[in-house]
Length: 267
Image (tube, rainbow, N blue to C red):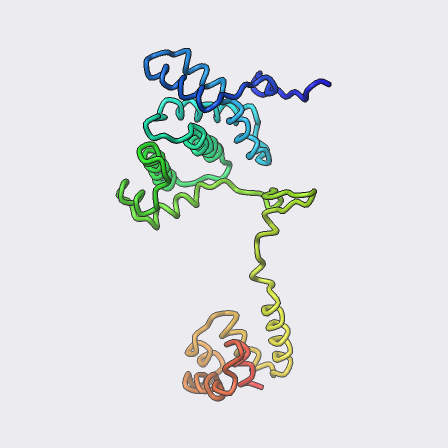
């Protein structure tokens, strides 16, 4: 029975080899001694790692060959900067480096335009994070990044959010037994929650009991956002009268929303 074969960037994925942890340690020692052939073997022996990471971005509608090549750039950077003295597995160090390289490529090729200043701030933060990981082999906190590059943490968070690639609501995040969980399944609809539409129904019922003048007051105060003074001037009463109208029986209706309180006062 022939194996299922896929080619990416001219490489047949079924033929890729995987190095053991012992083999990689030996090759890194040779590389440190100046053996460039060892570097080539490390690259070839970790292409499956790159492939597994690239598959995470399969829903992006990007060219898989391009993402694979970008991932290989991240792999080479990981090999160049890996330090055996930290006694961690190479894959533990390489995975975030490869993912970071792919995400940087996706950001740079994003159709949504972001201002140059925001991109510069975001990239400074990303490079500071990568340098921190290289030195400490752990993720830095946002405060540590802010201290390193001399930028307020709020500005860093805003810049990083601005360069994020858009995600489809139908992008799968989890699959088990044929049941797929999509991004949209994890997003709550705050606008149409049960308590909101129940209140909306109550509001409509209360509005029906108001005359035209009272409806006009409600529309100006809660839909047009006018002040009490502006309302008073428009309907020909004093601002104090508008204020008394709003506060007259508020204590009896503490459990109602602000808009329903006013409607109750008017009915």
